[in-house]
Amino acid sequence: APRCGGLATAIANALVRTQGEVRTTEELDAASGEVARWAQTAAHARDAIRRLEVLSGQELIRSERLRGIALSQQAKCFTLEQQIERRRVQAQEMQLQLEHLEQHALHRQQETSREKSLWARRRQ
Image 1 (tube, helix red, strand yellow):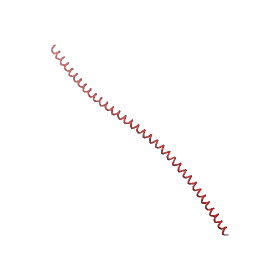
Image 2 (cartoon, rainbow, N blue to C red):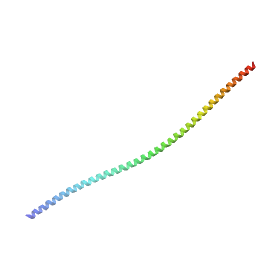
Image 3 (cartoon, helix red, strand yellow):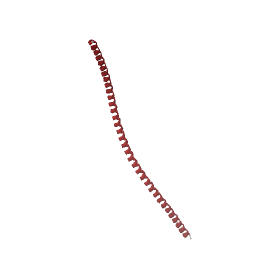
Image 4 (cartoon, helix red, strand yellow):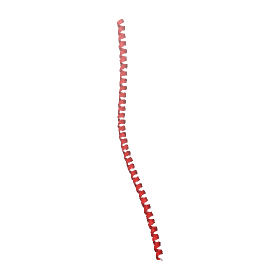
């Protein structure tokens, strides 16, 4: 009888161990599945990060190009402003010359009118 009880206990212990191993195996399978899902999520995250880094680099290049274009346009504006200023000064100089010529012409016209008057008086 004691041997039978010992055998029953051994079988019961083996059965509990087997059930525990089955539970442990199920847990390991579940854990392995979760690890695989996390690994896949991490791979997707790495891919997304790489894409963002590429896009970020492209945006940086685009920004530098735009900065170069802006500097070029700024230089052109500066050059045009200088040309406008030179032409404004030229226009002022020409305006002064025109005023001088108009005054000179008016003065000559007045002299001519006086001379005509003098000639007309002398003829009389």
